[in-house]
Length: 242
Image (cartoon, rainbow, N blue to C red; front, side, top):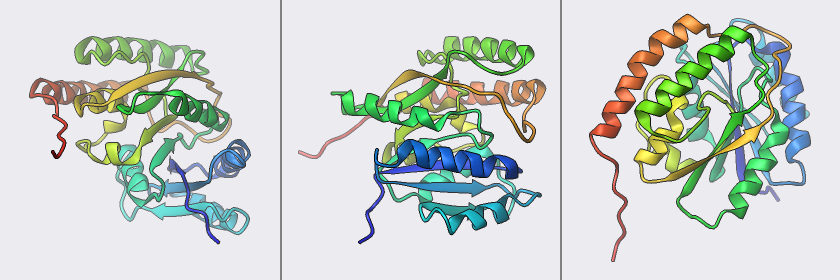
């Protein structure tokens, strides 16, 4: 009898062929006997053999599902399509570069299970000891400070790829490119609560980053203004039928 997953681990990837297998093995090691789970890998038109590597691993890991974009759409769309394809009520996300530690997922699940607040829908990873270059850490520090001041989302680190959230609540949010970086503010706007949880962070051991400080800054200005506009236009009001 097939057991329905209680957790879907969504991983967007683009040219990460050398990171795929180690990360999948870590996910399986972290979640086996913890929660029934599936892994949903979303390939954003890789030009290497990432998809072929994934397909080869499906024989060993029946929990693995593969979604492939026909055209390049970016990380936020990859995450959203992975969430839409998921079969579990709760979603954990990880970056495909291996810098997030799957061993932190049980920690996020424990925080969720210990919570007595049904409105708490997002548990966001907080990289307290980042293993990035000095320039990237400096840029991230300033970006987080500016975002926090403008959006008042009480979140120290929105760029961390490891998050745990309710699928239904996520799919209510407005979708736009780069929206994955503003999940706490968007969840709060929707009437939900969020919390930041300290997590591990690791060096990238293979492949290259798809972002640099300049392109992050340029798109971040437009995105930040857009999210601030959404919040200013009013929060979403929850309803109940009497």
